[in-house]
Amino acid sequence: MKYIWTAKVGDKGQIVIPKEARDVFKIQSGDTLILLGDTERGIAIAKNEDYLAFAQAIFDTQGDGK
Image: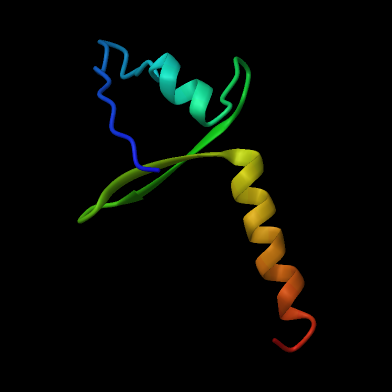
């Protein structure tokens, strides 16, 4: 499924992730998020634990010659 939300940037550079987005992606208070940036395509936000699991899966497949 595809979603779209808006968020305003405050004076301190902070944004509030809309509740519906937090619910859909199971983002909870205290979670660490990672921001991935590309000057041409923009910013992507992911949960740090999901990104680390993805990276580990890549490293794990490197050892079996695939």
